[in-house]
Amino acid sequence: MSQLAIETNSVNLGQGFPDYDGPAIIADAAIDAIRSGHNQYPPGPGIEPLRRAVAHHNFGYYGVNYDPSSEVLITAGATEALASTLISLLEVGDEVIVFEPCYDSYVASIAMAGARAIPIRLHGPNWNFDLQLLQSSVGPRTRAILVNTPHNPTGKVFNLEELKQISNLALENDLLVITDEVYEHLVFEGEHHFLASFEGMRERTISISSAAKTFSFTGWKIGWVTAQPELLAAIRTSKQFLTYVNGAPFQHAIAKGLDPELNLIAEAKDALGPSRELLIGSLERLGLKPLPTSGTYFVNCDISSVTKDDALTFCMRMANEGGVVAIPSSVFYLDREGSEHYVRFAFCKRTSVIEEAVFRLDSWLN
Ligand SMILES: Cc1ncc(COP(=O)(O)O)c(C=O)c1O
Image 1 (cartoon, rainbow, N blue to C red):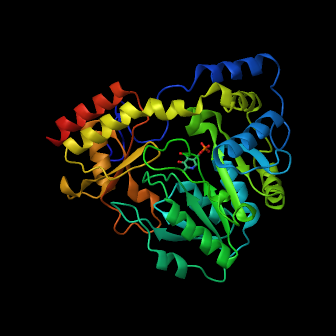
Image 2 (image 1 turned 90 degrees about the vertical axis):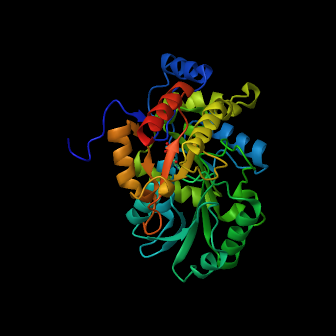
């Protein structure tokens, strides 16, 4: 068997999607929307009830008011929101500061815009960054800082002080800040802070989120952007030629899901609690050294105490010999030096699946 082939009966703790559905009431709303004829192109900016629901959500959770008609855009997931933001707001040769490790679409979308990603490293085990290095990385071509909090793949939730440092830097240097907040409602320790609510930041922050993680419907690809009208109009222009629109019936369903009266937003996090505890506790017991994780449904392990393999080799062996799939976190770095001992496990899986993974890991490691 080729070394790159992975056993198909592996337990997959690699990719970040739940192996269960989100709330039935939201699924039913999508079926109702299909049956009642919401099957043609929706309006370019997204259906009005969803734009209103997003504005209401951001005001309710973070106290920031957005006009649904000029400051909210519905997109094909956060991925398209990021791509249209970066493509529309960057010029060729611009630089965007990203915290690495980082979600893989950032570097690709920045490159599609003809710009360059400048990585600032989050250092394990606590995923701190060097403020001086961040400050000195701002140059004449820096246009934006991209902040993902809660952060994939580390699980870091940026704290208030760190976000103040980032917003001060943006204000002092007239930079845009693009936030990727798709895990905003999956915070287990600490608190999620909305950067656009910081003093002076609403005008320069493009806030991006999505229904994928909040409601466990990753395949529906309903995301959104909120930003002041001038920035949003530019983003809408590039979105128009990427997908134009998507997911008409799902937009109706997510508008319902965001209704505060239904109280559905806490469900995903509550459902994850037992799997999170089970996986982190078991990894610890197996000597895989799970690192601190405060948000998202990921935990990284430092594998250096159990192997001399690099993360990629270890993950290939773990899949082929142990029957468990995880992701070598080195793939999330621009410069892989020093990242070769981190492996990311996802716990958005049923507890029975995590138990099976732990059983297999135990037999494989011992
Ligand atoms: C940090 C981050 N941003 C964006 C996305 C993609 O979100 P969507 O499915 O809404 O495009 C993901 C999905 O894994 C993610 O981890």
